[in-house]
Image 1 (cartoon, rainbow, N blue to C red):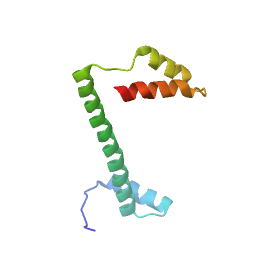
Image 2: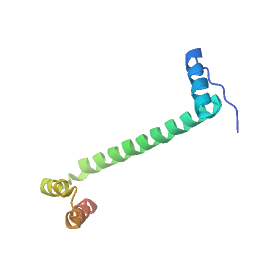
Image 3: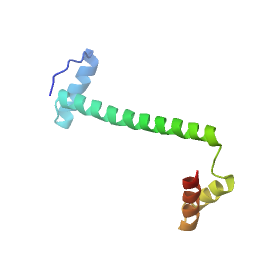
Image 4: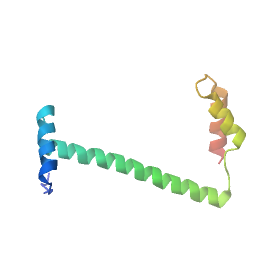
Length: 96
């Protein structure tokens, strides 16, 4: 593992020290965990962004969408045990 330097102002570092004492963790551990969580969150957001752009490009190419009535039926099925509506919508989405 390679060491890296991060310049933090005193206020941020003091906050890290206090939180570290409360959590019984070092400021170093807290920084590593914060960076890991940030990367996980941002990578997931980037995946969603790329998927959205790909779906938009597909829509612009073929114009296919899920019909309004299918979406309405799906939304109306929320909170119910209606598997039929979900299966119908999944089939429509798969056909796109």
